[in-house]
Length: 270
Picture 1 (cartoon, rainbow, N blue to C red):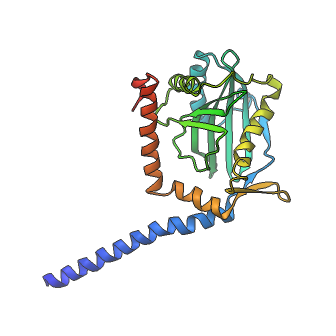
Picture 2: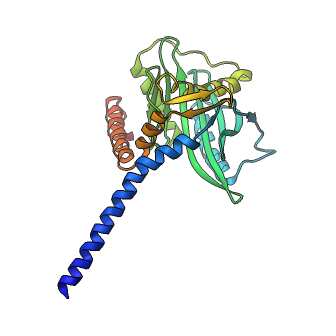
Picture 3: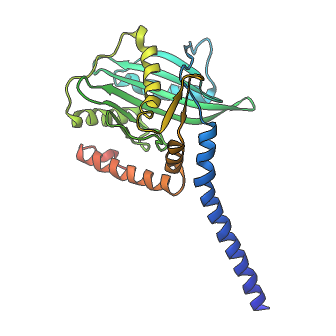
């Protein structure tokens, strides 16, 4: 009986190992195919401003903004516009609070991305990002997005991600330290308020356009949509799969903590 039990257990173990291996391989094979066939980004998204007092966003979005805006104002940022984009990616709506600090020539956005599930908003992403452009150097962004970046790094764009920093004031201290560390010339002045919407549009589309020369994305002039190439679909998907995503996240946190200590911001390391 004990041998029968042992054989039965062994069969279950082998079956479990096979199932786990199958699931593991599935995400690395089927995942890229699905991304390649379905992922589309609008090359001409509709970007609208709105007044939250007249048309408030979902409560989960409002709660996030109500927490972030006072912190941004405390460090010298002013709200320029509330913005909604509903057709950049299918079934996902993005709402931004766009802020400017003309004293430091930095811009900031508080972002919420959500999908509507049976009439209820399901938050997919929410974070704060600071951005600046050098006249003689790269675009620089510092954010606390919890999701791992999927696109290929490009030399003219510096992105620093500190997902464990929840306070926008502390994140801006990090952004300021990064700017100082890069040691470039003066920043590009922030455009007038009436041009900010088009600046945001250009910055969003630039993220996709940057991936075309490196072969990760392609633009279809007939449909007006960006989509991943087969190479891009594979590499972007694999970067987000387990265990690669976990390894990247741990490495990014370790590197981030080292930079914080180098900048004298030891208390923000975590």
